[in-house]
Image (cartoon, rainbow, N blue to C red; front, side, top):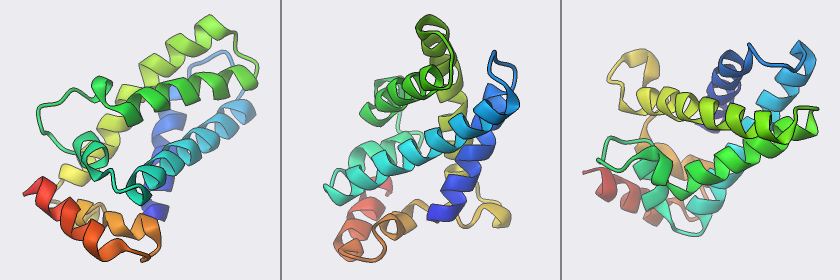
Length: 147
C-alpha cells in the first residue's frame, strides 16, 4: 500500500501543481518531496498509535479535512517545499492551500472506493505503513475506527 499511496500522491500533486510559476522539473521534484512528506507524516502517526487522525483523513467521518493535524502539516510542508523550489512565500502558501484539499480528496476517493481497481487502498491495510512491525494491534484499531 505504501507504494500505491506514494505513486498516487505524486500523480495528484503533479496534476494540481501543473499550472504554477515553477518549471516542470521543479514541479516534479516538489510533487515527489510533497508525497514523501505526507507519507512520513502518516507513518509517524501510525507508529505513535494515533490512527484516528489517519483514518479520519481518509474517511467520511464528518470531520473536515482542514481541521485534521496531518492535513495542516501537509499544507505547511508543501508551502515550504514550494518555497525551496523558488516560489515566493505568499504564492507558495496560496498554492499549498489550494492543492492540499485536492490531494487529500483524491486519496480519500481511493480509500472509499468499492471498485476492484482500488482494492489496494484498504484502510485496514494501514499496518503496511509499519512494514509489519506492530501492525496487528494497530490494524485492529484501524478496523474498529472505520466500523
